[in-house]
Amino acid sequence: MATIDIVKDVLVENLDLEGDKVTEDATLESLGVDSLDMVELICDLEEKCDIEFGEPEGVATIGQLVAHIDSLK
Image (spheres, rainbow, N blue to C red):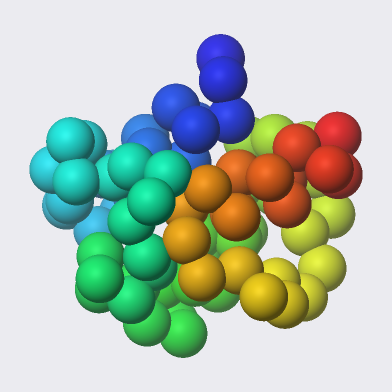
């Protein structure tokens, strides 16, 4: 499964977002992802992608999040 699809699934499941709103250009802020949501998102993504996420510096969009995860694989 592509990383964007994993991210989309986690966001849809955790935040009850519509899948079509989760695009690479969407910002985490525009999707309503707050700091608590981000912690939960990171935990879920670490588990699903088998990675150690670390501190997500400079990650503002879904595309940047996907690129960060892909760089850790």
